[in-house]
Image (cartoon, rainbow, N blue to C red; front, side):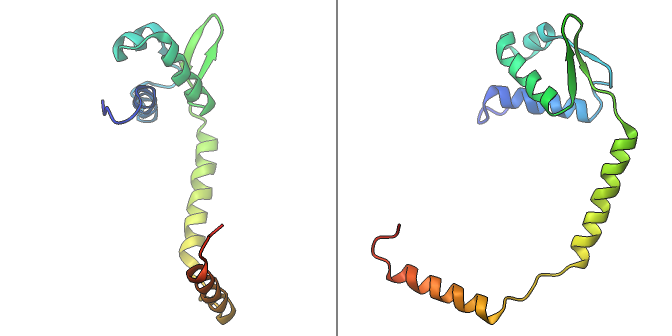
Length: 121
């Protein structure tokens, strides 16, 4: 693991990647105890990671039953993909707007005021 990132963040990213790449199949059980042993941490920081994954919608916890990888909702996934493709098309079709003379004058005035300021606030 990369030591530059906090350990909980590393665990979160590893578990998220495993879920997203289907290393953990939808419906698979995630056991806190096993994960804590694998990552060499106590269950306390691991619970924080699992809460974050649940907040992201990647897992669900059922009191008394355990923690499970969420099922894939193919219809929702299709809708999100469709929307992203349409947005990409619109972004590609639109170009940057040329700044107006008024905008350029306002920016020049602001730059001049910054150069003259002795005590910026």
